[in-house]
Image (cartoon, rainbow, N blue to C red; front, top):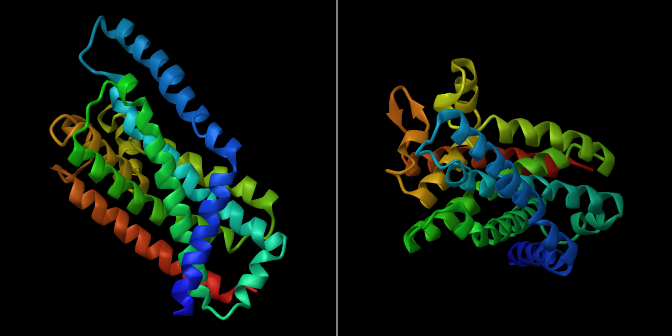
Length: 264
């Protein structure tokens, strides 16, 4: 019972900190706006000029990738709060509380995943600009996929943060993880337009399957078919994408809990 209460308190504390940080809420829109409106519009116009007209709507394609970017970056940055709590002594007080360290890790993971999902939901305000019209079922599926995706990535962020002692070090390590995971995924560019060797790398990236699942939820399986991930000539359906993300999350969660248990 103490462990369940501890999980809830840690989860609630992270949500409360997020809600009170108004600057964080506002800046949530900055990077997605730059990528979707500025970067996306620029590339879309260049493609239209280069092809003499095309049915490919790049902004529509990139929109689920931007949602994935928000979830990815927010989830991984959960590690910052963990390192911050360690530096200022709060984590030590939590670790000596009458709850297991597993409960602490689970509480942090759930808190980070919930925040990342909320920030992903905020991106729905861009739906009119992105030229998409997801169904109610698609939005519900998107929310579920975002939470599973965020939980897996938050677990990875906790795993990394449990091995890092200072905020400065985490600030150096996190981008080295984030940008390859993001750019080596089908978030920005369709896999069929990539060189063969790069397409293979994309298929080994677990983030690719989370973004592909979100793209299917937003655009529908038929409309997103040409942009999907193919393994051995087989188009990955959304359920198998989610299975891959869940398996990755189980591995990251297990390693994060183990790392959390042995830290000082």
